[in-house]
Length: 79
Image (cartoon, rainbow, N blue to C red; front, side, top):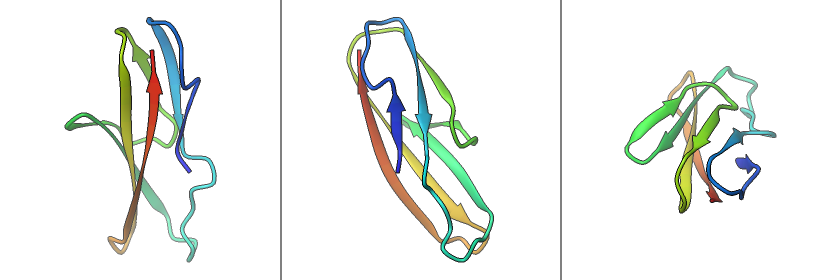
């Protein structure tokens, strides 16, 4: 489950993207990619994002295991 904490604020502020509860059913190691816009912004599980302008924002979390199986979800926040 992906989330942004906080998920709303007045710019500028920092939000933390989290992937709490994300796991692989076979307990394989997993890799994370957070995508914001058209670029990867982080390969760590819970990155922080500086929000400097007003607007709605979203990011996609892609989780992959060592066999190439993947899953994704999105998260939104607003300033």
